[in-house]
Length: 101
Image 1 (cartoon, rainbow, N blue to C red):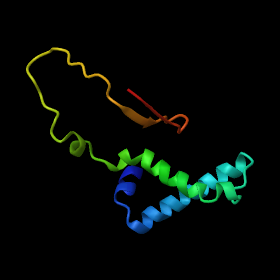
Image 2 (image 1 turned 180 degrees about the horizontal axis):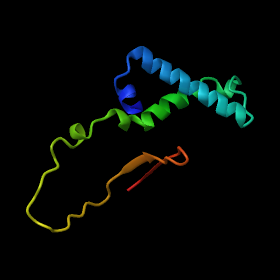
Image 3 (image 1 turned 30 degrees about the horizontal axis):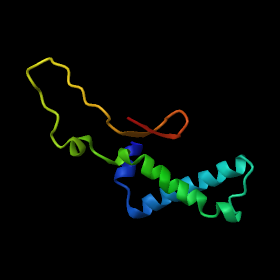
């Protein structure tokens, strides 16, 4: 449900979601002892909110569009190895981005 709401959001709803996320980041900063209004952190909640929306943009993508009909059935059982595929994701337990191959 949340994924569909995000995908089908109007510009106003998307802005409200971003503002809500930025508010949550301000709360996190306060909870760790920071002042979200100090000069060095000015606009950080908004920047982080935008980054988090970017890190999770896959929720707005359709797998069929991404693979572009590249998945098909073949009549063999041999192993295919593809190396050095770059991966970028977000740890669901810590909400920390990671990358690798």
